[in-house]
Image (cartoon, rainbow over all chains, first blue to last red; front, side):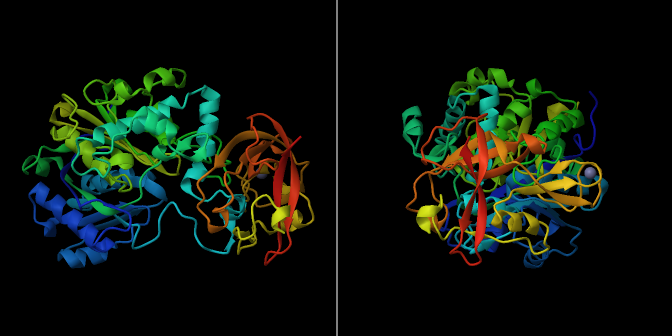
Length: 395
Length: 147
Ligand SMILES: [Zn+2]
């Protein structure tokens, strides 16, 4: 396979995050959280934040790039990009869009950021208070299908039914995140390990697939990564995490309303994963470590299968805590604790962790991690995923 | 009123989209009829509603009455209430139903009956009509029962 699009042209040179909080507990407004994460990423990169000349985000982030540019005193704003689509499906696409802007010369130093204060604004997991609903919601909400957990459970229920997949796979995914969080000082679930018994005894959120520990947290915070050209990154303080390729989108009629997508029992990644491997010339067995967005463990299950890490019929054997753990596992997964146990920063935290693995700085470092994959929020449309690599992957 | 509906009063009230796209569906439901979109040019069934046929790009989308015979494609049982009207309800059953007589389009509804009943993918169901007369404006939901 050849290498296309971005392979090695652009690198992440800086990462930063605010303090992570339980939802509603941030002392700072959301905009301040965004600023703190961006400044920290610039400091990590060893650049002046005024050097940033582009902004990229996703999921209708409320923190407008022009306000950010004014607040930061940026002289020449060259790129302001919002990736369409709700949820965390666009986080890898936002990084890819930033990288593309640098590769074609629209901008030279682009920050990708996400800030969330679910306390200042509304919580994702609560229904809107509107007395009437129209459009797709009219066909869902009156039946009690309102939250993301309720909207996506039918996809996973069908997928697991078709492939005879056990719920033990979901337990393993949840336990991997909690296991890795125990060594991560940033993780909100540090000090709260998850035993198999504790998982099994947790209450149903949506039967038959989502127990409490299958669902992401709701948090306040912000996180950011800064991208520059590969040449510039080599002159900076940190070991560059090169973008080797990315893909975004979804398959045939994926978002047709009321679950009428052609391939509805899916994480939406079938065509995107194929394009990611085409773009990078890599295959699943080349990947050393994966950060896969957990809105729900079901989404991780389907996303990893649709990225080719295991065949559906092998899932019950493949998805074990040991296999998914750094140190012992065939596929170390969510090595910071992820959305479940580090912080739900709409997937940006998982981007930072993918970079740490390339740098060799993770709290759960995978030995010789040269190829680091990041899979954005599953089951929505569009979705996105990307692969980062170390200097060793450029030869 | 509450005793006649699967979920309690106070749930979000469905109203037709502002552009009128799905108004024929909601009007038909008030008459205890299930209508869905079918293309006047190529005969394709289509759901959810859209102005254009996804298969042939004709704008001649018509509304056709269907039998209401369905098959459970998937299901779920929410336990955690996310709406104030559901706080005291406990778990309830949601089914994703395929309509073999209408190109296997899918619809979401509740499976009426005991809220903890056994649900099986592949089981046959049929559409029934659940009026909410006390709501403002009143509306009718298409619901599902085992057949
Ligand atoms: Zn047509």
